[in-house]
Image 1 (cartoon, rainbow, N blue to C red):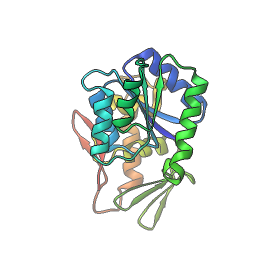
Image 2 (tube, helix red, strand yellow):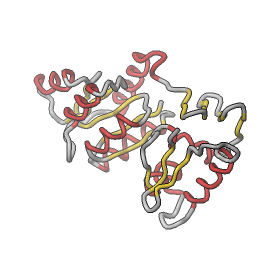
Image 3 (cartoon, rainbow, N blue to C red):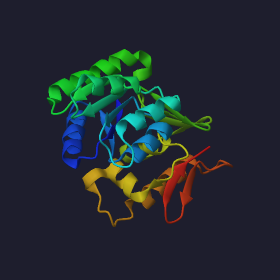
Image 4 (spheres, helix red, strand yellow):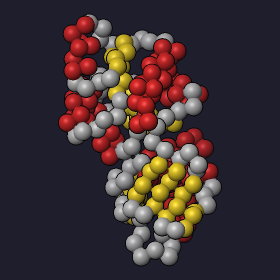
Length: 223
């Protein structure tokens, strides 16, 4: 599954992210409620793991706002508050499950699996579409119009990240962290190089480009 993790404690975020990756999931991490809400609304995820105590906007407000925006993605809330009224507030805000800290990673992963099963066919988004561009995540194939596009593993990861956030401007730092992780130097121009590669494969020969540059800010994909 592709999972959004919203957790302001970097130590917990790192442990949870590693556990999810080792279990075969792909994870995007943000560290405050406002960023979590924006990603939850504009991105495409199979599950949102949401801490309650967050800066800028608490997890309950984020969850309520997501449901008000008709985001149906399953939400697993994490909190240090163990009282029954606290759990009720989380569920009433629209959460699908509620896990109290500290927790065993085995139990956390079991709840992630359960939410995945509960979502049925909706739990895994296998096809991403932006305009006339389709990305098949199961077959790892890209197609625009009648043209099949061959991609390297890194190009595929970059394209998937852009297509999961259509219309959202992603900074170079966000792209580097998500696609390359610790493998890329923050001062390198690897993002610019791979954006060029993708443009050459995806936009060349088409009247309307899908990948757009916001100079000094970042990149977005929009039909």
